Image (cartoon, rainbow over all chains, first blue to last red; front, side, top):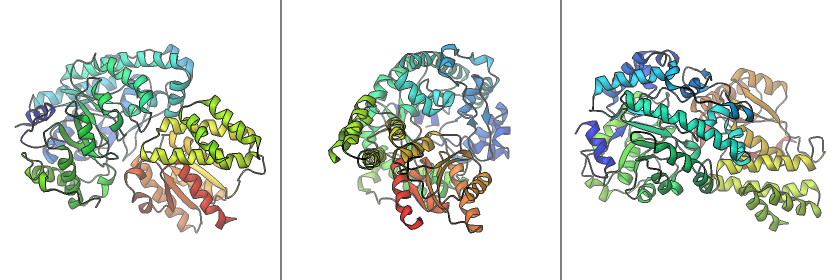
Length: 352
Length: 210
């Protein structure tokens, strides 16, 4: 099977030839090219070349032309702060007062040079990879975008204290997210990773999620013209996994803070799982620890398909060495081949 | 008095300001403000901190509870009140990062627990070291969200050590929750898994610093 066949098979809740590996090491492309992150992300050609080298070197099953989250805020008039070893971050909030929400208008995707750069990178990867390798693009959910637009503390206050303004912000953001996601699909992306960390029960209780993020996701995903994966970016999701499945998403990105076997049981074939290797600990893993983590994840969630191995955040830190990524790849090759007969006799040795 | 903790906590978790205020007024009726804070507000926030660690309570609830309790306590124990805990001289900072929420929550919970502390906002390593020394800080609470920012705490601890400055450093934030060894690696004296942990840590260090 090629990467696309492998991925589509597991998403249909069947066992492919081996567990697909989505190695979301998007920043490592810059390292491959010997560029700073700022230089790397300034050119679609850099990202195309970087992604191709990462794919070749580490052997993952998807291309991931995700630049950085703050790039979406650039389209809204915001700034990005670059540093040597850290994902680029948002500058000052674009919403400085509640009244700014009343005047807010969604930017047109094609009017943003930053967004167009991503579309160019997607198209370039599609030309090189065709239908052999899934291209996973990213759109921040309308419900989670305000963390960057106005700051998390003021956004929590808005949700609780100004419901009408919150609803207006969701409508404006939704128009943008839908246009942005569909533009990426039109450029050649196979699926959209719908980053929605605020919906995680780490950040809001389930009841509030059902009244807010869940409604926003249902409305938004219905208008995105392609498959989506909802990612909680390390946040917990076990209590809401059935609710997330009901939004129409195909995949949920899950956290290492929760038990993968429990998550798989809760998903109950309604949605596939993506996760949940610990990207923070990964920085100091030995090859043996990498292998043990891969083996544990596959044992807990691999049988029956419906599982893609990945990190639990949707972005592997810059600090993770190449040797670790290679050890993960090798471990998937060794332990991820179906049928997973070894799982029957496997017992969890516990934390290393 | 202890039976007021549960209804107070429940009101906080439901973001019910009116309910929380009513319980707090009941607590104030029979004792001094500092006693009401220590016997109702602090335990409720501690319990919420424990619930946050297990995933039973969400960040939005902890944030709103901290902010509301800070306002309540500010009203009955203004910064000039002699019952406020001004020692050990403490400061909180967001190092290198731009994600303010965690620091804001810890600051609120510390103040809602009767502590006064400097809020340094966001700083880089060198600026933080100079400021902490100039302010004669004894306890430094460092909040981060990003892994690279967490790793920069090592530079703060190294500089303080090289200059012979005996500041206790407590760290907190997502990287430390995902890697329980990280706080030792960066040379901190302790890590907090929740905002309530910060209160416990500082209280534990208070005795030896008076």
